[in-house]
Image 1 (cartoon, rainbow, N blue to C red):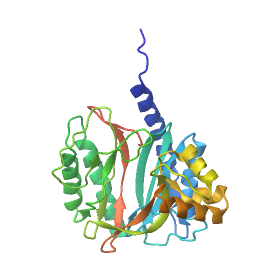
Image 2 (spheres, rainbow, N blue to C red; image 1 turned 135 degrees about the horizontal axis):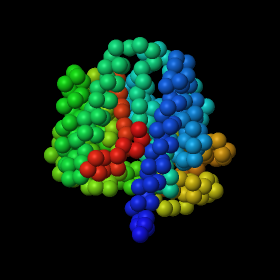
Image 3 (cartoon, rainbow, N blue to C red; image 1 turned 90 degrees about the horizontal axis):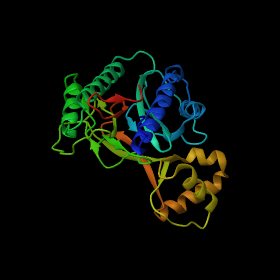
Image 4 (cartoon, rainbow, N blue to C red; image 1 turned 60 degrees about the vertical axis):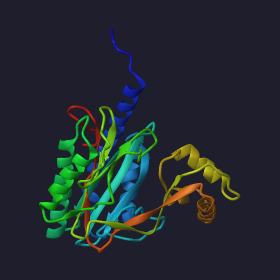
Length: 302
């Protein structure tokens, strides 16, 4: 007798489908990384690939360069371009029915010894974190594995950035997975879906908030005087997931979008994200995969 699929089975199947799409989208990135490439064009092409493959966007594609550790999402009409010697992080997500696969990869634009060592450190730390994962593990043990691998290579982990539990339509679902040895007692359970994302830096191991970056998510219910159709579109299209101002600019009048976002943020309807900058201005590398926790955990974005 064939066992009927449970809701958990169906959700895990959706996570796997999203992971395969994210993995295929990763494959196009190396060819996009070159001097003169516009950040916005890289982000657009990664996002377009996810949609072409049958997925939806779990959150906007981040193109974070050098000391920008995370959350740089290109704006509509942005002209920033990669240059020789840059260290670029491409962080993005795909989802199927709200089951999100989150992944990131770092590249050096041209040959650069520091970039390559930082990237190797973040990749080794990710592998160490994956190896440490099993049902019943404390998140502090994973953090210790990350910290040990990065520090033995002469760098520091970013301590105030972390991996996270993922649930349906909830990218950061309450359990944080540190990138250093903490006293956190949270324990991971079989069937959980987690993102592991070590950040390695030659700076002091912490980030601070920079300017707003044009990324938002619904935070509270409410009404607006201007742009009601924009708010309805966001609720219908993105639900509780982050979205880019750039996406709205492509669909609605840009002036109306700006007025709507200003009002919605002022009323607390939307949460706005900021860029995250390494405090010493040092470079940062990031590596990330999403896993389903089992006795032998399943990497779904590889």
